[in-house]
Amino acid sequence: GENRNIIEVETVAKEWRIRLGDKVVGVRNNNFAPGAGAVATGTASPDVRRVQIGEDN
Image (cartoon, rainbow, N blue to C red; front, side):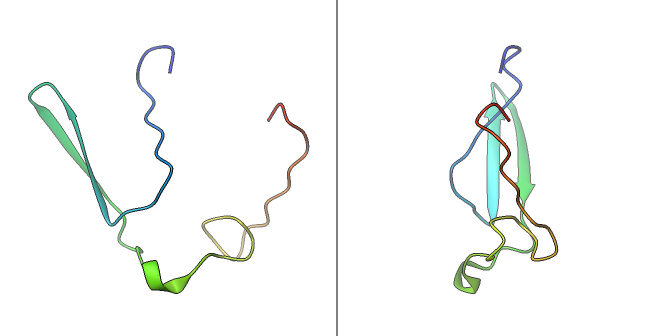
């Protein structure tokens, strides 16, 4: 990002370790289930519906 404070990843994982110099933070996905397959709604939750309005979102 503009202030170098955004990290974008293109896959899911059980845990990520993010390092900056001598600092480390762990981000854990407690619901990681690679065998579960994709949610049909295209979101992280079956209760959320994804609506694409335009290309400028």
